[in-house]
Image (cartoon, rainbow, N blue to C red):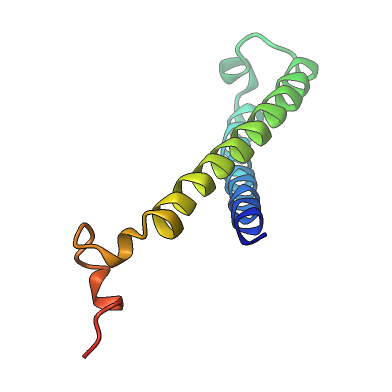
Length: 100
């Protein structure tokens, strides 16, 4: 159960990060389009840009969820299975497990 929650949390994190990146890219490019549509519109109409937005939204959502899911699986393995934080492989983390 802990693994499912951990990977789900990473997936949600991936979706949230992609949402922020998508918003930043979108605000930046829409600002360019509003300022000078003939130069930055690539010869497309506003209707075409709405379709591009819908398609890229789906791709970004799938990409963010995928990156989050696979990152969660990777870090689950590193932290809970391999327990690298206890090894000398990561000496700066070794301070957390030292007992005086």
